[in-house]
Image 1: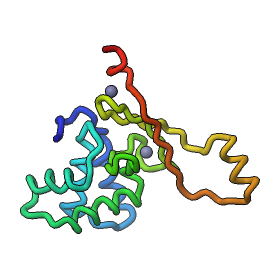
Image 2: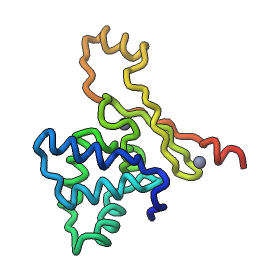
Image 3: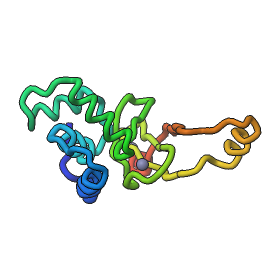
Image 4: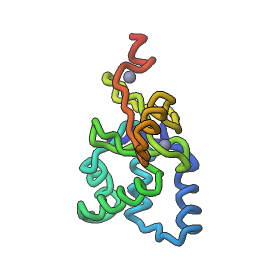
Length: 151
Ligand SMILES: [Zn+2]
Ligand SMILES: [Zn+2]
């Protein structure tokens, strides 16, 4: 289910366009449409939801097409995977940060990106102590958002 343009980062498509031009990636229709679908959704979308939405703009899209497009945007940081929901959201920050951290409302399903772009100090200290080099991490905090909490 898509709820219009509410949560769309107006720049995300433009950013994606120039990113692809700059790095000589092909901005294929499935890639473009998949990013649009994820970017305009107010809720995280599973791969199957994305496939269904894509079917409205492209005739008979195949699941691998969707998975490849998802993988592409994820790889380049335009979307994030919410592991605990097995779903995807568009990055609110462009695509210039490491790690992803989210607050997830268990009532309405809203996802808020926290922009904690570095590991918190206790974790950093711990990885350093263990001479462990972190490459990616995932922090998902479930709870209730302000809108739901005020009911
Ligand atoms: Zn992000
Ligand atoms: Zn909520």
